[in-house]
Amino acid sequence: MGRNYYAVLEINCNATDADIKKAYRRLALKHHPRSSSHARAAERFTLLAEAFDVLSDPRKKATYDKFGEEGLKGGIPSELGVNGAWSSGYVYHGNVDETFRQFFGGDNPFADFFTSDGSEDNTALKSLRGQKEKLQDPPIERDLHLALEDLYYGCTKKIKISRRVMNEDGHTSSIRDKILTFTVKAGWNEGTRITFPKEGDQGPNNIPADIVFVIRQKHHPRFVRQSDDLYYTAHISLEKALTGFSIEVETLDGRLLNIPINDIVHPQYTKIVTGEGMPLANNQSKRGDLIIRFITQFPEKLSPEKKQLLKQALIQTHSGILKSFQS
Image (tube, rainbow, N blue to C red; front, side, top):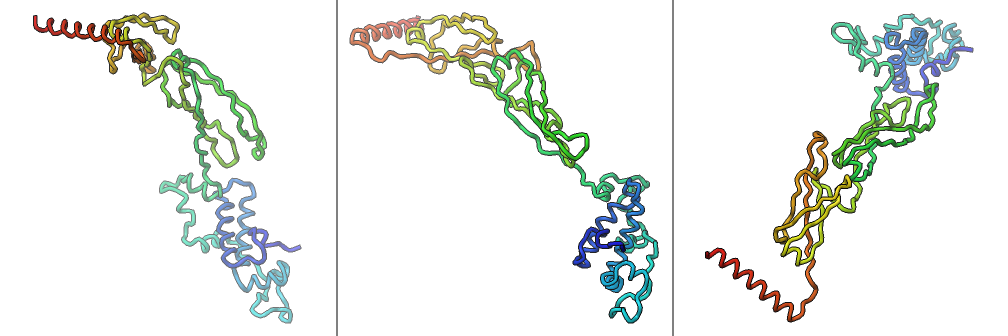
């Protein structure tokens, strides 16, 4: 059985001249001995050149299509010949480099694939060999919700992921679990990113994606965090706001702070307790502040007697203040 030149070029018998040229361009670059490490690259490259030499020439192609390789190479008797066909026996000239050079043009078709000093241009050769440069999949981001205490003390977290892993045959894959372990440093802020390089799904033609965990802070019943400071809200009576009091605040590490408030608590008043906030991520020996805000609870109503007493007390207080400034 004769050789199938169409199969050699990986096209069908209805291929156009443009299809033939496109197929030869792709396969010749892929299988050129200078770009391929396959043991039979030279043999494959020669066969491609012969197939292209036949199918790209209308007379040779017409003879081959009608009589096959045997008729093409054995010659056709004149009485069996077709108009314009190749009647004498065909012999490929054997100069595969010449076929390649005539198609691509120039004396050195590989000039673009080597640098001026003769070393290989790896990027170009990868393209030449039909090997697309592998691109990395985009990062996979997941929120990681942590308690405020975890960010205050620091901790170690273990997270199980499921990912696609290539099997030993290099072609098939399977789903496997993996435990990712990392340390949360005391003082980390919301939005901190922990990256595990190339832990995404594996594939034959891709670089696995990075897996990125983004720190998110859970709601806390007592504190609101802003940067390295902790905010605490206390509800107090009007009496305490005007006369002074002490407030107890339980810290994240379980201590009970007793904080005296000797000032009049007006609507914009805050009490700052230095050094009782979050640890600084870049300096564990320092901490932010505890900032106490107050909500004053006013009485819903007062009797006429209480209103009169309150008015007198405020008048006396105001008079005392004026006298102190006048003396």
